Length: 427
Image (cartoon, rainbow, N blue to C red):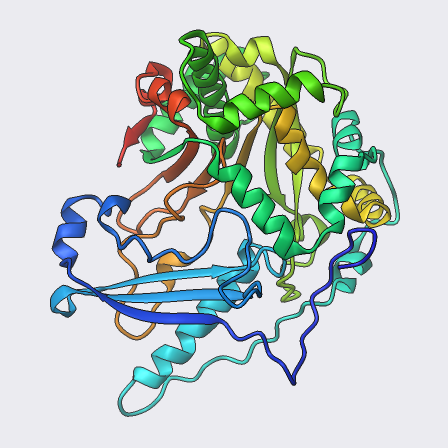
C-alpha cells in the first residue's frame, strides 16, 4: 500500500500467499436443504470463512482465495464456498478462476480418455485497460466528481492505512448494524407485465432493460422501507444510531442536499472498452451514480414514479461511453484514495443503495466432474442496502434477487405490495 492510498498486488514466488482451503462433513442430508429452498439457516455456521468486507485470516494475511468444501450426510451432496479478494479480481475474474479450476478437476476425475482442457491466457496487466481508453474525454457527472474526486481527510486516512487494518475497522462498523437478507425470485413474465404497466410514462424511444426495472424498484423499495422504519421509530441497532450522530456532527463531509438520493449501479466496462476477449481478470467495474430526489424515492411507488426512476437508471447507464469512462479512469489514477470515499459517504447517507447484476455469471455451468450446481447464492448477507441480481438455475427463467438492508427496513419491505407484486420470496 502506497503512501497515498494506491494499492498494488505483488506475487512473491518465494513466499506464495496460498489459498485458504478446508474440508469438513455436515450431518444434514441434501434433501433437507432442498426442502427448505436452500435456506442459509440450515447451512453450517462456519461454511463462510470471510466477512462482508475483506479481512485478514488467522495468520494475519488477507488470502487471495478462501475455499471451504463441506460434504453432506450419506454423501448426498457437496456445499462449496468460494471467495476471492476484490482487491485482486472482480466478478468476471472470479468466474474465470473457478471455471478453470472446475475444468481441471473434471479432467482429473474422468476415467479413460481425458478431455482436453482448452488453453487460455488470462491477464492482470492494468495497461490493457489504459490502452483501450478513448482518445476523447468527457467530464464525469457532478455527483461522481463530488463523491470520488473532492479530497476529504476521513477517506484519505481510511485509504492510507493497511488493507488488513481497514478490514478490521470496517468489520467492526458493519457488526454494529442489524442486517437482514432475503432471496426473492422475479419471473420474466412479471417483468414484462411491469414493463407494459410503465409504458404510458416512458418516452417511446426508450426501452427499459430488465436491470433498469429491477434496480429502480429495488432502490425505491429499500428507501420506502427505511422511511417507514424511521416513522415507526424502529431500533436499527448501534450502527443506525452511530450514523445519526455522525450525520449531525459531520454533515458537511459531503455536499449533499437533504433532497438528493444516490443509487450506485455497479457496471462492467469491458464491453464498453472493447476488451471482452482480452482475458483481463482484474477489477474492471465502476459505480455509476443515479441521482434522484429523496422525496420521489420515499413516495408511494406508482407506475409514474417508478417509470421516472427507471428512466434515470437507463440514462445513467447509457452515459457510460468511452470518453466518460476514460475521464473517470484518468481522474481515479490522480486520486488513488478515492476508492475509500464511498465508505465514508455511507456515514452520512444511510439511505444509499448499491446494485450489482451478476445474472450473466456462468456459475450454473460449473462442473467439477460430478454434475453442475443446483443452487447458487451469495453469503448470508451483504453490506446494508446492497442488492445482487443473481442467475437462476437453467430450469427457470428470470432472476434471483438477494437483498440486504436493516432488520427494521426489511420488515416493511416484506409487506410492500409494490415489491411483492413482482418478487416472490424464496427465503
